[in-house]
Image 1 (tube, rainbow, N blue to C red):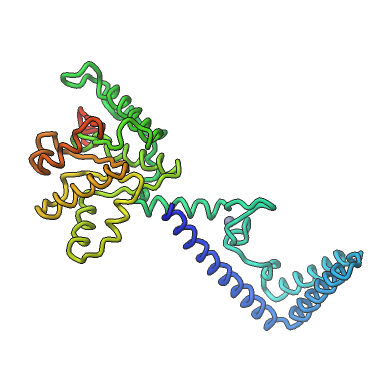
Image 2: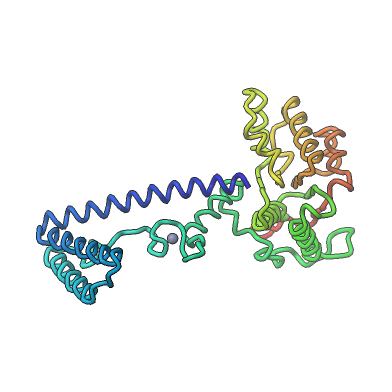
Length: 325
Ligand SMILES: [Zn+2]
């Protein structure tokens, strides 16, 4: 939850900044209008006094003077017409807000406060960004398009590529819906590039996020970068975040440079520590089982190929991206 609170705090601070900018803009407009027409200044002051006297009357236990709304209305109309005469829009002195619905507070509703749509969409955009989804947040199970996969038999299997993708998609969705109660804590998505692995990881990440889980998604290349920094600088904040997220999705394992002492050691630590702590890891790779063993040693491969720990999902068929071009 830490990342959610962090983002909310950031946004609340930004909204406060926005309200200060609104206020400055309101004052600037007022000064500008009064400089152009001092009579407007006098009327604004008179209107203010009228509001105060009305409020004071209510606080003193008196009813609001009956003609107050009418007098306000008259005054507002005079201000509006003076503004127009001086070349301003009639509503030039209405308070300005970026969002009229919440008046830049980020919240709406009385007495139960709810997030305004503007805050909610800013929050999710930033959440998806922060966990590594970025503009890929629209890649969801609902939008997954099976029709791009050829409906022709996969060699050596009793179904077509499209049927296989349908099964895989269900399997990934079920895992994301059930985690941490899924059959295994980890998943390994294996197959050549262009078969939809990364898309499904985005969809899983989004489903998990929507369920309120803490998720991080990054490429194996970026992971190596984080691991290398931690190794050389001793600063492990970023690595700690990777360890701590409920689910870590590591994309395209095998594409990163192999740095003997770092890649292997850090990757083993990552997988091991997450498994020991019961945290889920989803990994995609273009490598075959044989290549995985050769590149990452038996120690790592056995962790990822242990069916009690990790569900192996094998993608087969043609690269749909290549097919379409
Ligand atoms: Zn709003």
